[in-house]
Every structure is written in structure tokens, then in C-alpha cells.
Image (cartoon, rainbow, N blue to C red):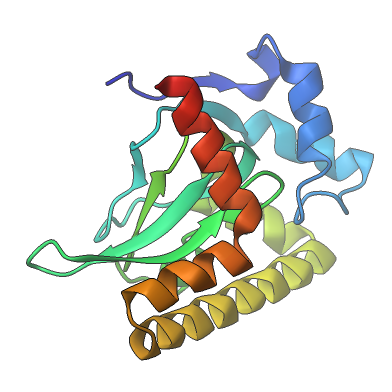
Length: 190
């Protein structure tokens, strides 16, 4: 399997288009030009193949991900290897280990590529330092984290209440665009 290729944003051959894509990110779209200029040198662009783990359950070194292209999933595993998907995230979304980082606990889940994925990422330390310098961005980001955690909690409860066919039907209803995108990529790769 091909491993993740990483390049600093300012040296990336597609930097111009990536900057446009980052302006569409739900967390980054409110940044002003000076804030973008401050953040961009910290960003690495990572291209990860389908199936690769970006973060591992139990990790303590954590990163902030801004999804440019593709789909990520958040997965929790038990000691026997049984997995439960907690959420999916796609273009213009984020995935993060912010709560675990702030609580100084190991990451309670893994983050994996469902499809080929391109992200802009930076260490949680650098992201937290950036947030501390920009109170309005920090407040908006933390609100997004609260919404995300609420969605994960509702999803987890629903998983416990539905049987397998019910879970598939719920996924198809709530995540139709992601299901179609993943299916299309599988057809291209076949």
C-alpha cells in the first residue's frame, strides 16, 4: 500500500487550488487574510490512500485535520478487534483529536481513510496555540466540536437501538452523498 505523501502547503504544486478549497472548510472559512497567512505555514498537505490510518486509537501524538478531498471515518475498536464507526467526514469538514488533547488522554478512536484522502493538517499543539491567539476562531471551533460530539453520541445511541439492516438504512438515508461517493470510487478502482 502506498503511504501518505506530505508536502508543506507553501511548497505544494497545487497550493493555489488547495488554498481555495481550504477557504470552503467549515472551520477555516471565517479566517481573515492575516489569520490565513499566519496559519498556512503550519499546514502540511497529506495524500493518504484508501484504508490508511491517520490516527490510531491510544495515540498521544495528535493532529488537526481539514479535509480537502475524500472521506475519513472515526472508528473505535475493542480488545477483540470488533469495530464501530462513530462518524464520517468529507470535503470541507474536519476531524480532530482536540478533546482528547485538551483532556490529556490517549485518543479514544482511530481516524482512517475510507477513500483516497487529501487533508491539510497540523499538530494539535500548533492548532491550539493558533486558537489561543484568536478567541473568535477558538469559540467557533469549539462550537463545531460540540456539534460533532453531539452527532457522535446520537449516532452511537442509534447503533445500539437498531439491528444491522436498520443501521444500513439509516446510513443510506443520513449519509446518501457519502455512500454514493464511496461507491463511485470503488467502481473506478474495480
